[in-house]
Image (cartoon, rainbow, N blue to C red; front, side):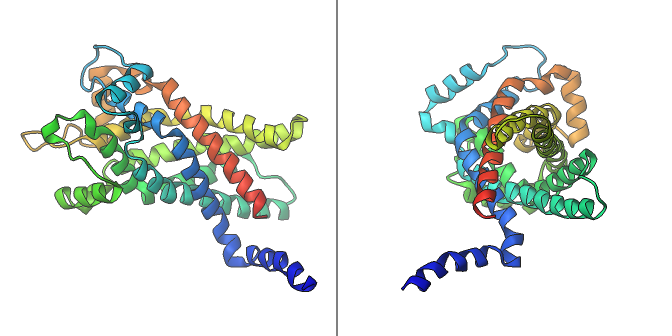
Length: 313
C-alpha cells in the first residue's frame, strides 16, 4: 500500500509536465483567472458602459457619475441587473483572456529562452511586442463575445418596445447573427483589436517590467511584488486603452436608423465625429470608473494566474 500511495503525487506531477499539458496550461490558467476577475468586476463594467453611452451626440448635458448610474440601474430593476451580460463576460474571458495570457506566456517563454542563449535578459521592447501581439490575436478571436456583452449591457437603455431582452450570451449571438448577419459579430473589431493591443501593452508589458524592477531593487515579498506591479499595470492599461474602449463601445452598440444608415462608418469616423460633436475630453469620460474596472480586474487576473502558475509548476 505504501508504494501505491507515494506513486500518486508522482503520477500527477508527471502528467502536469507532459509537453501537451505544459503548452496548454498558460491558456487554461489565463482563462480561469480572467473568469474569476470578471465575476468580481462585472457590476463596475456595467456602470462603465452606461457612462460611455450617456449623452451620445451632444457636447453638453449632465455628466453621469458612477454612483448615479448605479442608482439608476438598481432603481429601474433590481440589484442583479448590475450583472447583466455576465454570461457574455465569462464567455469573453474564456476566449479572450485564455488566448491573450496563453499567447503572452508562450511568446515570453520563447523570448526568455532566446535571451538566455544570448547571455542577456529579456528587454522591455520584447515584453511590449509580446503584449501587443497577444492582445491583437486574442481580440479578433473574442470579438463576438465582446459584442454580445455590449449589446446585453446597453439593451436596457432602449425604449421598451425596441429591447431585445436577451436571455443569455448564446441568445444574443444567435439573434445578432440572424438579424444582421454573421459578419456583424465582428462589428467594432478594429478598435477592439487596437484597444486590446493598447491594454495589453499597458498591462502585460508594464506588469512584467514592474515586477522585474521590484525584484531587482526592493526587498518586497513575491506577493507584494505581484500586487504592486499589477496596480502599476492597471493604470497604464487604463490610460492607453480607454479612448479605444470608448469607440469600441459606441460602434458595437450602434444600430441602423429609420434611413437604414449607421451613425458611424468605422473607427476613424467615430473618433472624428465624437471629437467634433462632444469634445476630445469625452474619450476619457469615466476614467476613474474605467480604472476601477481595469486595475482590480488586472490585479485579480494576474494574481490568480500567478497562483495557478505556482500550483502547476
